[in-house]
Image (cartoon, rainbow, N blue to C red; front, side, top):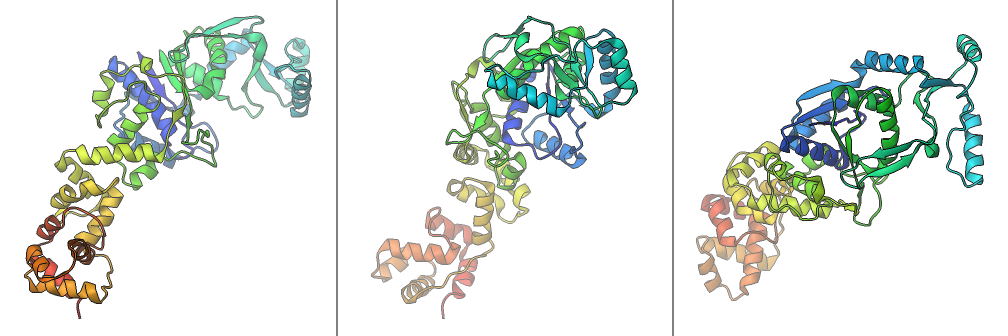
Length: 437
């Protein structure tokens, strides 16, 4: 079994693409197969920086690859297959202008027909083709789709799908500038690498029959597909450039744990949710595409926060402390702090925010007259909560709220007596002394 993930290094890896990469990796891991990272860097907007970031983000969520390749290094292979298909008459030049094609498209729509290429250049005489090519006339190159062909696409999520070649007609595989289209390079790579399964978004379903006929023409066996529902936001609205899903990079910066992100991605659209925050290796043991349906795949920040909060609460304290130190760069009293305040946060960023307040005293507090009285009484009672309560004729809630604000800058948190023990008398006296006059 061989699977692949083929991102374009044109931006940071978002959760939608990360989900696709994860599912391919889990399936390969379960059956002892290979997982290939195939960088689609042939476009003019590809950047090495984004390629590096994609690799870092994949490693962050626990994905490893057996092989990494760049499509820019495989151009000779694409040329060889292209030339072979041209010699066999399966690819031909199309000299139609954009204006011609647009007129054809509009005419088809007006007549209630699906827009497709008319085949105007499909049967041009050889001497005319040679003359026009020799003169340097611009042309793209189209694959000659067999007429009235019934194309079966095996799909692990949607079931077997049947397409008819007459619906989509001859399609472009190479642009007039010489660059190959994704459908061609993808078909060559999947065939050459022996890819057996392709898990991807359902927006690629319409490409599947094109890939099947291309691979058949090149003598390759088409893979088994699994087209997953695309992610939508909590309102059911598809993500887009304007309404973009969060990137893994942004989630890392906001203090999300990789285990939580993985758990959230695995549970999207899953019939029986996975409990806890298992690692990738554990998830792979029972991973199956049969657990996923065709219903909407909803991704929300609340879902991510839910899983992150659960991971923070259940993760081994030493491991969580290590994550916190790595995120914040703070080590002093880190384990004690994490253990005490983990129940009050949803992200490592929130935990760091509390650390700066509680441990470093990075907050402001301006007590009023009554609060000043409570602080003075607490110091006079040798920082003893029971003693100060017995001396003040004030509600316990008011006293505790004032002391919590004075000691941490927060209105809520762990039991106050535990906060006091954590800070220690020397720090408390020093901190409260700055608030009383």
